[in-house]
Image (cartoon, rainbow, N blue to C red; front, side):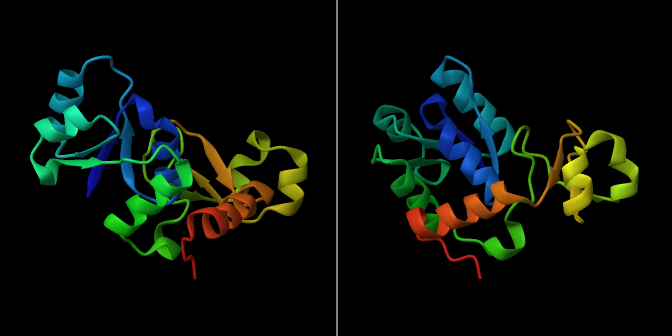
Amino acid sequence: MKFIVDTMLGKLGRWMLFLGYDVLYYRGQSDEGLIQKAKAEGRIIITRDTRLALEREPRNSFLIKTIHFWEQLRRITEAFPQNFTETLFSRCSHCGALLEAVKKEEILTQIPEKVREMATDFSRCPSCLHLYWNGTHTLRIIQLLKEKAGIQLT
């Protein structure tokens, strides 16, 4: 499944990427542009805009009613479940492309010295070339997903 979030749900879109969902953040100004992009790419619109959701067929939109972020994320994971142990951190948090494993030796000059000493597994976005590795930030994200959103990651 592919998704697109409107401008009201940018934070939700980014956390959906952490979980491995194929999601775009639409920064355009018009609902019509959002609808056309969703239709062209076969994406489900995720929105807090009741009018926008009502204009779409039920299978083409998903209305988020709560303003509370962690509840929004919980609603998404309940409505569109997937195996998060397989998909967690599998996408670029900048552009949404699927990450590819990269050997440490290939990127030594591109990573901080402390990271060279501590990290062993690395990924790179084939689209925007952003580099990723497991660190304290990934542990913090996992902890928040478990505690705040109630997402099972085992």
